[in-house]
Image 1 (cartoon, one colour):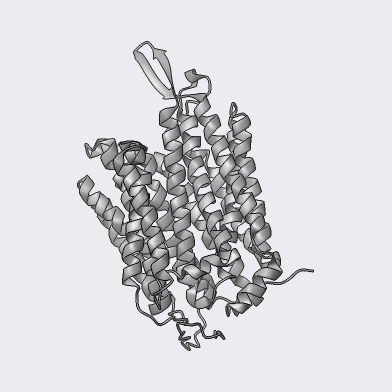
Image 2 (cartoon, one colour; image 1 turned 180 degrees about the vertical axis):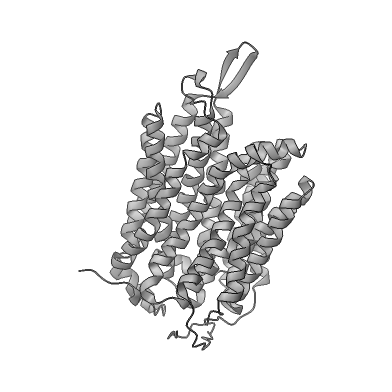
Length: 500
């Protein structure tokens, strides 16, 4: 497969391979790798209390299993994404999948919390799986299959997150927390073997050197911001550490932008953020990350509250996880549909549809969540909205930047989604802990989240999702997007079939 590229400022080396890969197997291997990573990201959260009991660890200590994973993913995703553009996406994908393999094995064998946290850092290093996979798809697949396949791969991340939350309850209930890692290990091994033995190197290269200054500054910024967001509830949002880290993260981000505008080979070309098709996709990804993890916290909590509260449903962790299955199934169905819409009409319609569905998904339970059917319908709408939106956001990036910058551009989108999910989780968790109601039982008094907690939480998510509608409407039309892309040297926009 050959590509004709306009020479970018940094230069490009389109290697000539002449090979014809089995594209179906290629997509399967990439999907399995993305699924394994996404499952491992969410699988631990519902099991934190069980892990803490087994390891005699405090709640604040065991929460580092989530924090370490997020920090590792956020810092290393842009680095590996850039290295993929420079050195070959398959080569770097093998590296990150190997790190995921090592981290999963170590986690399965971990004798204490310290080792388990280190294992989670290794697992988080595989955060570049999505940008690298999308880059390979763009480089290797026939143009007419790119948008649908990217839709599938983007949807896989939402699907994996849902599967992890659904599966966590039964695993820790019937086995032990070590099996949270042994089951996904099978996916990791199959994906890694397929990538090594069934995939040739992608032919697109962007020569250059890794921007060490930018890497260091971005690391400081992301670590500060995510650490403050993740630990703010424990430390206190007015605590000096929380405020100081937020301020440091914001200042470092500003410095990062100035540095990247001046280096010859930036880690992330921040000039891309001026492109309307790019910045709108990033904001939508951030909003959808917030909403997705907001519902992953709100819904199980509501379902597991005792029925004597008058608004809880008294479900077990296992049963409450099953209520998220409709969300996962809708992602499976809708993600390729979103890709098809993108191919015919461009990303904007799918972005708007996804944002509207996601907003409706939260408005419904915000108005009333007295019956389980309302929770189920909300889950269906959530899955459909996320399936449309995330798939369209990834495609919007692809259709707005040159092939030589795919890795860094999708990496930035992945970071936006990660930050959104972290903020969503932190905000909803803070809301739940701050709005409680005291119940008197024969054994004593107990404080539980009040009904107002869920009404406010659902309305908050609905408001954030409504913001996505506004941003999606601001995205460029198909005609304008293609015109802007051509000016930047994007030569594969003819994968879109314009329907008149």
